[in-house]
Length: 135
Image 1 (cartoon, one colour):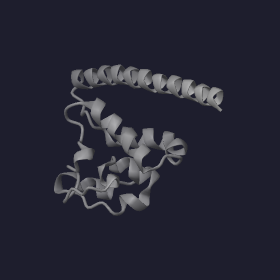
Image 2 (spheres, one colour):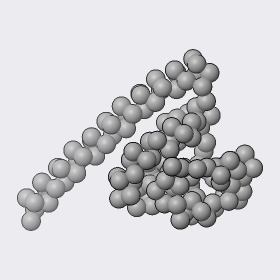
Image 3 (cartoon, one colour):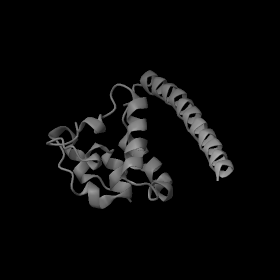
């Protein structure tokens, strides 16, 4: 058992290292994208682009539990910088709530977990998201 356990721990270590390296690589790409957006006076937050991303990832995202959806949403939020909505703080909601589902990007929820999206009550600033159509 100890050999199998060590083998699994080694594999887990390598997967974790890969995740961290990919996360840092992603951050560098986001910095470049945001610089281009700023140079061309484009908004940091582009809901239509996010719909495209989440639709492409839908098969993978459907396999994720609520915590994993939050992690992915928070990764995007934390790397996007100023001007990107702070979903994790509930700024998009009339009344922020503690449940994790309310801290996930609502566009991600609309694409992957529409039943959770339907529970959201948006603030005035983000009310347009309640009318969002996804084809």
